[in-house]
Structures are given as structure tokens and as C-alpha cells.
Length: 78
Image 1 (cartoon, rainbow, N blue to C red):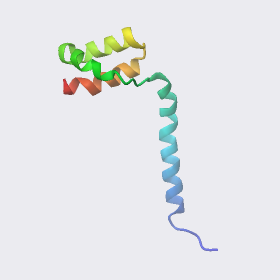
Image 2 (image 1 turned 90 degrees about the vertical axis):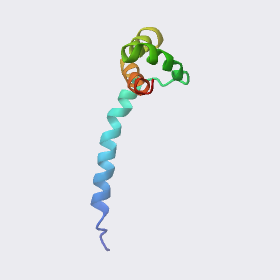
Image 3 (image 1 turned 135 degrees about the horizontal axis):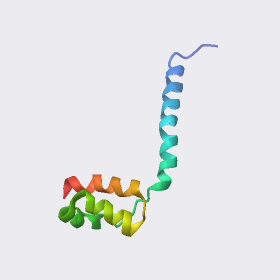
């Protein structure tokens, strides 16, 4: 039976991908994407990053990870 040279590399790549995805699966429990996130654009224009994070965390869902990601997404484009 012939051995395949690229097989160990594929195994390492797959293992690395799995190692990267496992923490994201658990962190995903703290993030809730919503379809109405675009309503935050005017808030980002007027108040910036802190306004978006404060609104999402305090008034919408209480998830700091989601609030920070939305602040990072919408603030540069406001």
C-alpha cells in the first residue's frame, strides 16, 4: 500500500482549524446577531463607539461581546 505524502499536512491543517473553531463555538453563545443592527448606524454617527456599545449592552441584549463587535463594525463607517 502506498503512503500519501500530503496526508500529515492535511491532518495538521484540519486539527488547527478545529482548534480555532472550538472556542468560537462557545463564544458564540454570548453573541446574538440581529437583522435590525443597521438601525445602529445613526447612533454610531452621533455618539460613536461608546454610544453603540452602551445601547446594545444596556437596552438590547446585555451581551458585551455583541456590543463591542457591533461598535467595531458600525463606527468606522458612520
